[in-house]
Image (cartoon, rainbow, N blue to C red; front, side, top):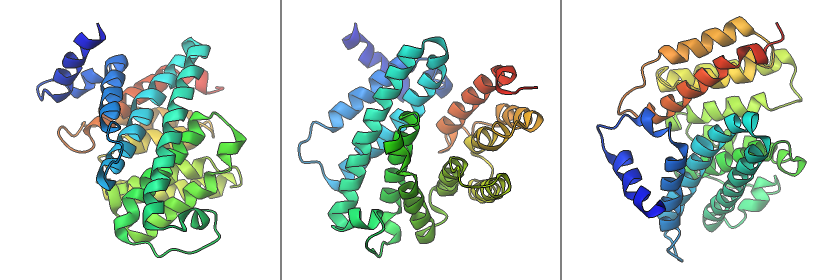
Amino acid sequence: MRQRLIPLITFILFTSCTPKSLLLDYPTLVSMYFEKKINSLEKNDTPTLEEKRIILKTKVEFAFGVLMEENDRLIEKDYSKGIEGYKKAYSIFKESQKLGSEILRDSYPNFDTWLNGKSTISFSSSDVSDLYWLAASMGGAIKSSRGNPFEIVNLPKVSLLLKTSISLEPTWGEGALYSAMMSYTSSRSDLSEKALKDSVNMYFEKALILSDSLNASLFVTYAESIHKPFQEKSDYVKKLNYVLQMELGKDSEFEINNIIAQKRAKWLLSKTNETFLE
């Protein structure tokens, strides 16, 4: 059965007339596609630098866009299966983290000591992508670990990677760096409510400008980072409903991202009464 499904997955994923939103309704098929792609990429025992980058990016996108989204929902229905799913995502994030560190270490042998704040490196703008994807893999490991203190201690490293990237090329990824800083900032327990809101607002505005307000995930991240913890129900609902009304940006680089964001917004809205005390 599995062998018969693979051609079907390939057909669905690469047929332009197939609505991309349909793909995300079948996470098992999408997972099989990603796993097949990753296995194929990893068959080469001596991958080139570019191949390593593709493997890293593919693994992080799979873990975040498929596994984490699926298990955020699954854990409410079947706790044990949800936990197993998070463990799978965590394993992939850790593999990605190892690969991302290896990529940067090949260029900068003292990278590990730099990441621990014990040396300096003069990075260039060409390093931003590598720094970002390592930060994403570390952030994913923290999130999927569900509070593991041995992962939480890596938050300052995520901050260092992102802030270094911003200092090198702030416009990279059309707001991706500032979007990541929103998520990082919302995880900081050392900030007052005002400081946290001010910081997230600043990154939100910068990301909106660079993305021309076309990235729906920014609004979902804001709703979950600010409106949810501070119990701002009305603003939370408005943000998520706004996401549902957004154009997907067909054939743009935001299309898949926006489909995921809209599906998450719809799911979050269905849980509004559970999320807010009043």
